[in-house]
Image (cartoon, rainbow, N blue to C red; front, side):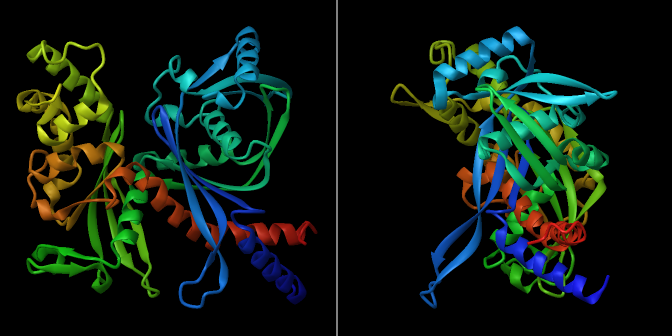
Length: 434
């Protein structure tokens, strides 16, 4: 590359960096089963607390969408479009049409995503989500929510279970490039995804935990060099092995990761692929089991058609709940409801994490970990020192965002090191740089 071209690339790279969150959209997506967590990069203006000057900085807005993805025939599509036109902004679902090319022929497919679609959607787990016609429909439906008028320069990062790393190329194929959607009101909305990155879902929780605790000390056993006292992550320079339990609504993943600091004191996370494992069982299954136990054991107390989520969560976390003003002991029902997931988690702990051998810390992430945290800490799940079991996010209400928040940190590093430099070179060579 000639010197003047190198200068042009450097200038273009600087311009692209300054536009992330504005001219260049960056979105991180965690495609769960029946829900999706999203982090969207935005540029905000704020005063520097030390200098008092107004500065621009990059932040992430976080969203949580209930979803299902279903295809509609033309009649169903027309009906749903009419319904959405009547509901306007109050609509909980999106309906759009996407055109695919098959053997040179344009084939339009009608999609509906959102809460209304969830009632009809099949529960896709694991590899079944990472296919054309599902993953791209979900992602571009989400982008349509974030950018109703489209976007011409997007970088999208998508999570996947650790053992499905081979699907990374499929994610790139179905998400990258130019896509045109036809919305329910007849508009054509265009997206151009110029960069696609992928990340292992447990790594997001690990990254968020390491970022959030970097300034904090906490109790640690000898295995972490804490000698039974306080241990500060800022003092850590050697490698550390972490076991991650990612507990979702219908899916649970266990993963071992190696973490260490680089020469800039930044955390590096490396997945240990052969130590990953998962089961088609999560918090939703625990709650359904608890409902069954409560109605079987305590018919008079739980005779209503629906048992509120907060009551179920209280019982899972403490073994009791307030029912019609009285504290109700449901310890036996809790024990039975936890039996299956305990068996799964203990099996993964023994088989994939070798009973915790060589692992210094266990990080809980995913929405289900907030409710099961107490069971882990009490020793009901795995036989380890409760002091080495921590939540990926100290704010228990935000634990469901831990994976996508940590992935946003990983994404920015990937964008800085890989995506933007490649894009800058491509724009300069194509004569499209400003």
